[in-house]
Image (cartoon, rainbow, N blue to C red; front, side, top):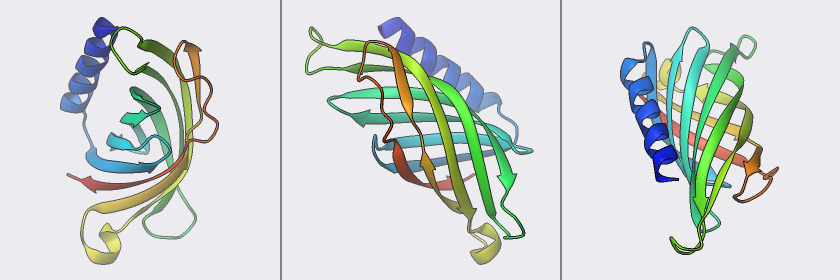
Length: 150
């Protein structure tokens, strides 16, 4: 399990370091609260989530597509697919490794055009399905995220 987590952290670091486009970092609240890091370029991006819940944590990587939501300046909607790995349990001896797939769909508003400050707020639905071990299927993955864009 440690090898899987080390590999995922290395992939995250390399992806974010080599990303061209906007990089944003934020806090996610709701089911499986945590940290969100995202790169976005020409409507395509990657998002990495480190979330906690049920006495454990998960690292998810998602590939997303973003689209303008009508004529509203700063409003977009997005969807994406990805994978996750996690660890759940109360001790190192009884921990369970999880590997699975994720999907996401949501809406985001960037306040930059309104108040000239690079902050955005999004609300999304992110179901997850564990293929191996873990917490099982989570169909209730509703959350809100506030991000600062660098």
